[in-house]
Image (cartoon, rainbow, N blue to C red; front, side, top):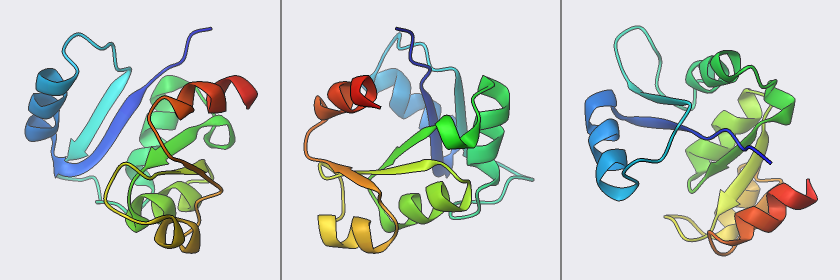
Amino acid sequence: MHVKTSVFSNKAVDLTQKIINTLLPGHPFEIVVGAQQGLPKKPDPAGALLISERTGISPAETIYLGDSDVDMITANAAGMVAVGALWGFRTEVELRSNGARFVLKRPIDLIDFILET
């Protein structure tokens, strides 16, 4: 199974790429979207929809994994499957109250989630 992965951040695109290259060197992301002129920041869904368009995956078939209220709002505004990550910045209550349809406790849980979905 091939899973396409992308990154959408409100950090500047250059900084986002530097972080990715440091933490996940060599990972073949399909697209990396960071803050840039002409593209509104989250929670506007434009960046998420750009990723959907460029990867050829419909929003309804896209898992949007995020760790904040803004991520959950963005995912829902884009019509994506909003999945909260509890290893990030927010609590389960906050993620769910902002639209998380699912919540994962550990990064490894994403594998089972993808296989079950």
